[in-house]
Image (cartoon, rainbow, N blue to C red; front, top):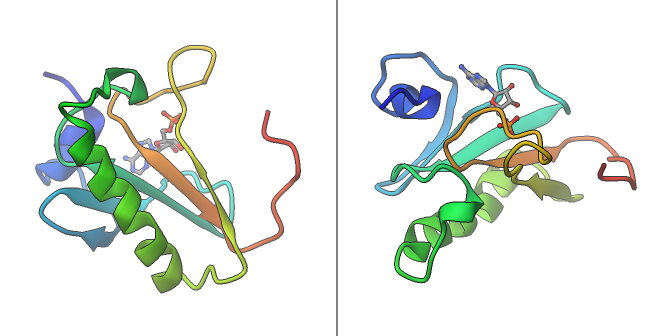
Length: 112
Ligand code: AMP
């Protein structure tokens, strides 16, 4: 399977790691949209939130549990935004479930 983020997990493509545990990997976005822009992914391949079910939701729960710890380590005590894009209308460009953490400045009130 040809997946960019699986290749990053395998170390075939370099990344700037900010966090790792047995279930979760987080790294800096290569094209940051805010002073802090981190991508948090499950080590299990899921194409997007659309593939999450009650049976595999544990992989996602580990990701969600890691996010506040990563945010704290990045100094985002004033707040941050978490986004996951899904599919064409969501402008998802990498088909491996990932959550963007954006912060380090006052973010806009609009989300579209
Ligand atoms: P999305 O558009 O929601 O699928 O987000 C994919 C994100 O992956 C974009 O913000 C890209 O800038 C980012 N990205 C693509 N390739 C890399 C890479 N090699 N290392 C880090 N981030 C990447």
